[in-house]
Each structure stands twice: as structure tokens, then as C-alpha cells.
Length: 144
Image (cartoon, rainbow, N blue to C red; front, side, top):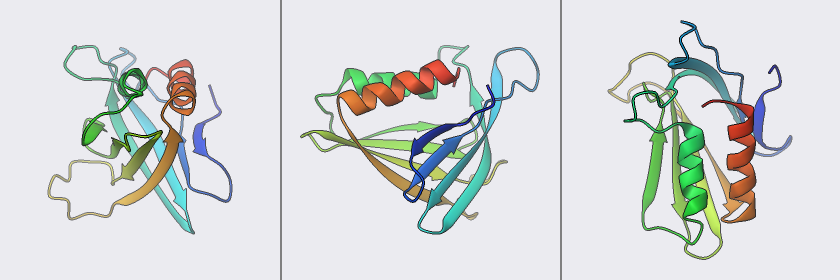
């Protein structure tokens, strides 16, 4: 797959996820280049993600599937993070019809002190069909 996954559209906020690379060829750990574009800002990082092989972690596609299953709503925030926090997706449901996905990028490599740069964009989706389509598209596109 050479075409990236894109949430959003040109001229508006966009989250771009490029094809994951299995650097070790074992199907367990992947790196993925990801970008955020919004209002003249562009941020790019490479995230380290697992395939869910150990049962302790959830893949990004699995996280989105869980949000779709709870389309009726939930309290507070649900968060998915890449292994080294370069990519974070924070989901909130308004208890009416919409889910806000707050996507945050940070530089790759360990930086647990939060002193490095970060970039965030928020995407608002309809809780039913739009979230279902997003989860299905991402799952079909990648093993993330």
C-alpha cells in the first residue's frame, strides 16, 4: 500500500497516516509516519506501534472499533497511545451525536517529560456512520 490513510480534507484539518513499516519483519512492532495539517501548521513524526500481539495493548483499529461499539456514548475521555507516545488519540462523546477525536503528535524517541513540541488537531465525527466508516477504512487499510 503506497497511498496514505487520510482523515479530513484539503483546506481543512487533516490527519495523514502513512503505510506502516515492519522494520524487523516479525509482524510485532511497526513504525508509521504520521502528519497533522491545520491552519498553516504541519507536524510530522514517526510513531512506534504494536500489533496487539501480547494481548495487553489495543491496536488503533481496535480502539476505533470499541468507540463504534459504544456509539451511544460514554463518560469522560478514552485514550489510545503509540508505544512511545508519539501519537495519541483522545476520544470524547458529547452524549448526543458526535465524537471528538483529538489527535496529538510528539517527536519520535523517548521524551517522557513533555518538554518537547506537540501538535494537536480535533476532528468531530458523527458517532454512528462516520465513526463506523473511519474504523472500517483504517482496519481495511492497515494492521495498526
